Structure formats: C-alpha cells, structure tokens
Image (tube, rainbow, N blue to C red; front, side):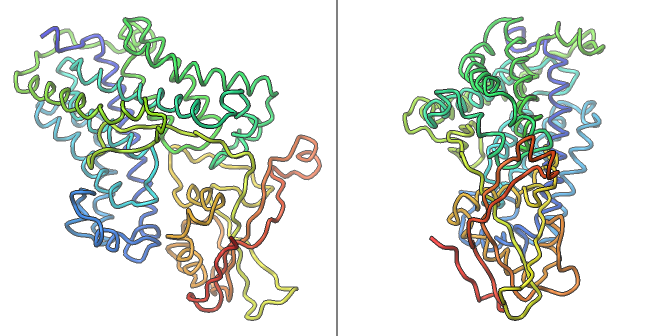
Length: 482
C-alpha cells in the first residue's frame, strides 16, 4: 500500500512516540502531585462540585462516574507508570491492535483529568496534548510502516498551532505589527525563567528581530510543512529552533516542547540518518485492511472537524485555545494576542498578631515559580507545570480571574492547611496558623544592570495597594478594591 505508508518516516515516528510518552509522564506527574490542593475533595475548586453541575456529554471523564481523591491518585499514578512503559518501548512488540490500545490508555486517562481540571487546566498545552495523543494512537508499532494520513494530520495540528498563533498576534496587539512586543514580553510573561532577565536586556534591535522572525515562523513556514522534502524538513527545523528559543526564555509548561515533538514527524529519513545512527528494519509489515480502514475513518473525522477551526482562523473574531467538541480533537490554538506592558504581582502575607496595628509585622508566603522575593532568581520548571503559580499571574491582571478560587486559597492559608501549603515554596507559619492573611498588589520590573550590581536583586517592586484579605474567621473576607 504505497499510497498508505510513509516508510521514510519510520524513525520520525519512533522519535515522536518516545518524546510524547515523556511529555505524558510529566503531565501525569504534574497532575498527581498538585490535584489534592487544587481540585481534590477539599481543594480550591473540588471535582465533586464540578461534576455535580456539568453533565458527562459536555465533559466526558472517568471522574463523572466516580470521584475520590484516592481514585484520582490511582488514575494519575497509573498514567505515570503507563507513560514510563511507553517511553522505554514496552509497547513496541505488541500486536497492532494491542499497540493501538496501549496508546489509547494515556489519552483516555489524561482527557478524563483535563475535563474535570476546570480553570487549572484551561491552557492550550492541555488540549494540544489531548489532540496529539489521540493521533498518536493510530501511528502503529515499529514493525509496520507509518501511515501517511496520520502524519499529515499531525502536520495539520502543527500548522494550526503556528498559523493560528501568528494570526492572533497580527489581529491583536499593535506592538506585534510595529515589532515592539518583545520590549515587554520577557519581563511581563506569566512565569519568567533564569534567562528571562538577560533576554529582556537584549538590545532593542534584537527584540525587533525576534518579533519579525516570529511572524515569518508562524505565518509563512507552516505552509512549507506540506511541501516536498527536503523543504518540509527545513520547515520543521525552523519550528524546532524557534520553539527552543522560547524554551530558553520562559516557562510555558510543555507547550514549546510538545510543539517541537510534533515537528519531528515532518523530518525526513535522510535528516535522521545524519542525526541518529538508527536504521529502519529491512522489511516492514504491510498494514492489514482493517488498519487502513481505521486510518481512513480517522482522516474523514479530522477533515470534518476541521471546519470549525478553519472558520475560526479566517474570522476577524478569531479566538485562541478553544475546543469545538468534547473529545478535544482538532482544536484552535494561539498565544499572546495581547502583551501586557506592566507586570503586577499578588503577594500574600500573614501575621500572628491578633490585632492589626501600624507596627504589625507581616511575613510573605513564597511561591515556587512566580516572582516574589526580588532577590530570588526565577527558576526553570517547564516542562513541569506549576498551575497555581500560573493562575496567580492572571489574578494580578484582574481579581475577576480569581473570584472562583482566590478567597478559598486565602482561607486555607489562614487555616494553615498543609495540603495547600505544599504548593508553596515557603510557608512562614509552619507550626501555628496566622491570625490574619492578606494579599497586596505590587508592580514588578526587572532591575537594570546597574541596579543588579548594586543591590543583587533581579526585580524592583513598588506597592500598588491592598488586593484581598482574610481575618480571624474564614468568612471575614475583604474583597479587592475595584
């Protein structure tokens, strides 16, 4: 079946499958280590409350049938173990039908988690993993030539991911059109990493080159993914390099890494022969008729479901990171349609003083990833995803983004809840709960080189005002100023 197979992409499939298994592993670890505080039975937004109001048809999930923290932990750790098994190749020697089922398991498990994850899972990399993971089911084992239609479907994912992001920028913030967005982005992005300070202090001409290169990569290069080789490999290489630049400059969970992994499916065999000393087996099995029928059905489904994201791409009212079906297939993507110019951070503090006076001493809670202590260098966490830290960035933009969970967060810190405290880097009240907890809003900016040498600080911050507070009773909540 020469029309069906793409033998020159045997190693591309192998690299993609191994790397995707590694990303699944990180995703399940991120879920199982944070779920109790965020969506557990006593979490900030509990799953039982969510499934009580959202029907199965809108959010298909194992947890619609049953939820307990113990059951979620079993599902999460099963996902970790299953991903590890796929990573080391334990599914490679399975029969074709069993291999497809082996890849369907992590997809079904992670889809179940995403559908009950609520605001904590409302990011493009979650739907991207679900979509790429679904297509990975049909790639087949190493004994069968890769099906061309599945590879094309993965290139179509990459096209929508890059082209959608490029369009949303052109249609959105003016700074993308005048090439000035990178003057601000490295400083104001959700969670800077150890190199962001240096990226921010690149000369302005370099920032303009970054913005221009972004337009070329996202608006021109995606079309070349469907060109003959070696042009397709060149397009994939451009995507991999530019996504690697983003990995170096910020913490975006597994978004950039997964984009690079999908791009590997467009790399031709000749390039892999130069990069990796691995050769395809001398004779690959012909795909059985039932497998060809399944792949053809998949292609029809992808083509039909593509109507909605294509309509979104050509619309002036383009939205980003949206799914059009409950299985999260053939989604629309995009990022940074607008770029914030000023960075605000919510800093949470507590005090042991029962009565607040002008001389009351407040102690800060320190988060693992988001900026807090101005002298602390931002850390690298991606591809691991710190969900609370990311949501705190949105909370600083507007309290409306945090209405559903921020009061509960302060109340749990006020009660010294140990599960919630484990999401933090530093709890200033490890033995006795504070009498009062408050949140204050600060403006943050990177120090310049002179300030860095003089103070040793990476950030300079200025108090804006009060944000939110909880007093002696969890019901004693003072809401943020309008």
